[in-house]
Image (tube, rainbow, N blue to C red; front, side):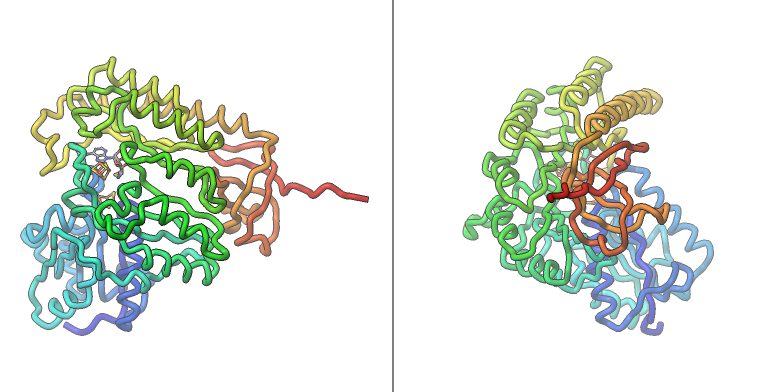
Length: 443
Ligand code: SAH
Ligand code: SF4
Ligand code: F3S
């Protein structure tokens, strides 16, 4: 097989996968490959996959099956990401036309695996359980010119009973602070205005390396000091590890946005215990109360799973009530999906699909109502918007507030990449509509 000249990477799943795709694209470009216009014309095709729910896996399986049927042997085909870790070399049995399987902890080895697949013509797989801190993050090629994701901690040690991530991403490994700072400095110098720090649980940053003496809030303080740093976001925060120091950092560091994605997962303490979330509803509510006391203008986001094994209607109602009480700005709502290899598999998936869907619909309707009320309250307010680009309508500019709300308003090209103060006058669906705040004229 010849050295491929072009590549195409299809990415599924979360922002960590998107970032890994950017790193792999950078490695391939360094090797001399260029991006292909589409899947069909690529010499090298990579599926960077997700295993979080059954649907995510089925999408990729369907795609791989199709490629096999079409006998597209002209392209080198690889599977990377979480499904590569969940299924390892068993993927070769199901999809004999696959050339390689590369796990989430082996991105550094992409070149070696490609060489081996090319020159031996054999199927190659590399799926180590532990991440070695030798990944060159700086090669990442990013499509976006203003916003960038930066990995600060990989893996997860929490082992929630429903979740594949600790198995597909391995143990928590923090990235050295100097390396994070170096990348962020480079991004700021290259004109990036918003940096999102990524980890399954950013709040555990540094705990695996006490000798660094640098916990998450310390890292944030260092990043905030980078000259020209405009906005910093982070995700995700496990509620158990949020500290007062972090809350104070959100209050005090100018570049740190007042938005915390703080997934509760369920409103019933019995279900939370069964999920191994290691907090009760009351403890969670106390953390939220403290956060709101320290950062009164904070906005919250959440993830929720409905239909976890044995969840009763009354327990679901508790989740509903918590959603109503906390009033999140953003809520990602999911129906429980049993995952092979997780502890929750030993329980019967006993909530019928119709019941899960019906609970999901009720939560969605409530969240829609809360969102509309929140948007209503924002009418007349002036918000800071990082202008990203023209909206699809071609007329308005589009950007996000510090609290992650989408805003459109009239303006010109020169405003792209700047912060603008925008007064909200209406909204359409989820998007706020406003106009640039005019400075008062002084005679
Ligand atoms: N580390 C993050 C979550 C990453 S996974 C955290 O702990 O908050 C993103 C979300 O997918 C989870 O928050 C959870 O709500 C959902 N999820 C994970 N496993 C799931 C499963 N088996 N079924 C349904 N939803 C799931
Ligand atoms: Fe999964 Fe829980 Fe880890 Fe989040 S904290 S990635 S939900 S195991
Ligand atoms: Fe999916 Fe893996 Fe992310 S399972 S959600 S791609 S960490």
